[in-house]
Image (cartoon, rainbow, N blue to C red; front, side):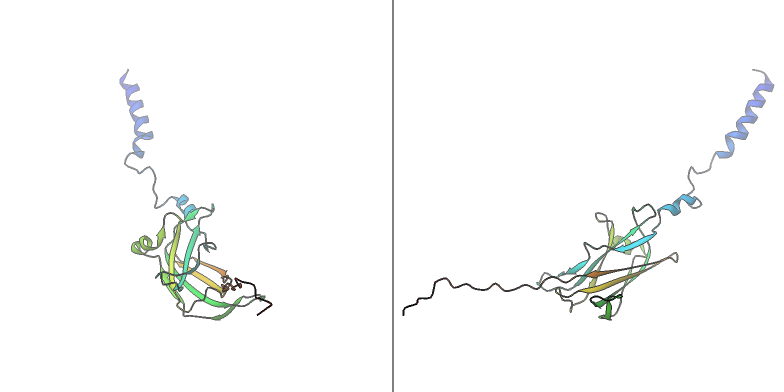
Length: 183
């Protein structure tokens, strides 16, 4: 190979290959694709959010709330920020079912690494919050709202009705013997 051909190959190599050396394969800080996977919606999980007894004494202690975030593809996502929960009395057949607010708002954080570890459930892919509400009644219906403020400035809101359970009816006792007509 002549010296001139070698020089041309070296120059082409330098122009095409060397500028890429030392650059990361994927720069996550500036990659616009990372925005695809951020939370774009939030919901109070309608099945697993319910009145709960945490102490095991047979009386409900409050409401266990599971919050689920989703990205634009509908897949579970994590989020960072602050949540505010409110519980209202339920008004039947009303355009706004929220009656009077029954307790002061609860504030929950998922803004720090410790908060994330404490509240994230890998199985359900939700954040869990226990709202202490000792006067809760399992037979009553409530309206639960959640407002989320992201650390990046976004906001989400959701509301569900927690329907009360049917009250337990004591079993009636049946006479075991037939009354006698003759005494």
